[in-house]
Image 1 (cartoon, rainbow, N blue to C red):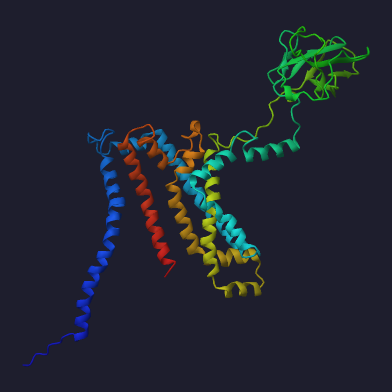
Image 2 (spheres, one colour; image 1 turned 90 degrees about the vertical axis):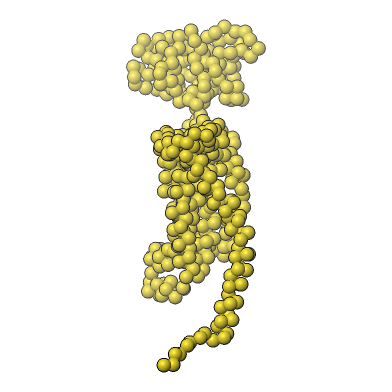
Length: 440
């Protein structure tokens, strides 16, 4: 019986032999990258996992005790809570703003300038951005832009205190209630209201020397600064050199009922038509002396995390806009034009056509932001003041502080780094999968 032996063609045998040297050459070129990857990624991860099983000194094996301590430490739990807030808010906010900007840039003539303006924060380092927003959120309205705007709006619609911080001279018969009202009996015709603690800049330039009111009818009196520049004078008396306090709101009350209101003149005098009575009192309302509105405590314990998320959004909205705009440019225009012909409005087109077709791109941007915010460190470290830094703490900052920022417990810090890695890796793999899917 004859056997038929099938052999590959000569050209195929030669090509197979040629593939093997090419693979070896490719491996030779990839080897430096693999060595760098092993030295900069694989080895640090392995060392961190091993280090997390030892105590702070690194000599005593403690097993999973560091992981148990991480889940029972209050500061670490606060960091986990803040990380959850970041993941829930920041990626969605950045993606939504980037989507709005990307859509708007298609409808304006100066789209390139707008994109450049929005993307410009990406060129600023996080250190510089943190310093910028630390100043923007400053509590002093003379330095913080946000509080300057808040004070300007507030002062536009609300009357300001005439003499913030002023108080009655002790021992002169004036009472200051718990609410801040200054009261004096109106049983006599002339009521003196000596005040101290008035800021020098609060006295108007038009203020005149204090004097007793003229006339014998009704209840009258004088509100004055009970202080003589250079010294001298007697407490509670209208001595020469004492200034009247104009613009003070003065009320006349009978029991708890206000029956008349007036304002002091340039020399501090005021007058009511009612006759003096044992039941009447002259009252300077607490609003005359209240501290002026100073804005919002943006970097206080309650608002520090939202404030830092705002700074993060300012930086990354441009990145999201550019990525989404690229996806928007590749959308088929036929469906949009057909929808317009059918009478669909711009909002309907955006919600029912644009967003569904952009879903893969939006998913990539969103997941990328999730990975980014889980590793957030520098903005929190720079913007949050020392007293409230623990209220704004996140995992990346916590592991740094535990390891190098005074805690000196690199075993616990390594455990936190491993936990952060375990949280980031699944999201990163999902992002890689979605990114590959968007390019197939």
